[in-house]
Length: 221
Ligand SMILES: [Zn+2]
Image (cartoon, rainbow, N blue to C red; front, side):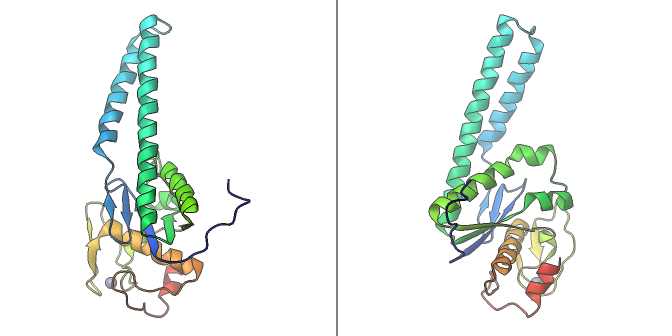
């Protein structure tokens, strides 16, 4: 899309993004954003209208009328969603020189995020809009491998093992670092992103230097 224009260079504050179903977006600097209630309601209404269509005789006047209602609500919801994605993207860009997101093609398989839920949530579209917004705002954007992001402590680098989905908090048994699990994933994404662009990797949470070999540990996963 932007092949003829130079991409922004990596610089400034790194922000990692984790997407999920509990929080739509979690960032490495601690922002947690839920999907607006509006979409849940609108989607429920959309389903209802679609059911009504299926009860009408195909090709009848009432069928056409019902179809039209579905189409216009569909368009309205899609526009609202895009608008919300745009606003969220700008909000993220306000605090960032570099934005790193999960490569969903890789993460889906390991987290069972493929399929209807994942597609419905619109993560792919959000990342496209985020990428475009970053470009416009001069913010560096890169996708990174985000496998096992919930199984690593971003503070000390140790593998903490798998978390159940119900376990919402990361508490490291090694260093005691405690924070929201999605924020932890976003922090691991940010660290991997920094490693990928070759910046000096520093601990995002506390600002101390990471132990040696830590980047290698992440890259080997
Ligand atoms: Zn730790």
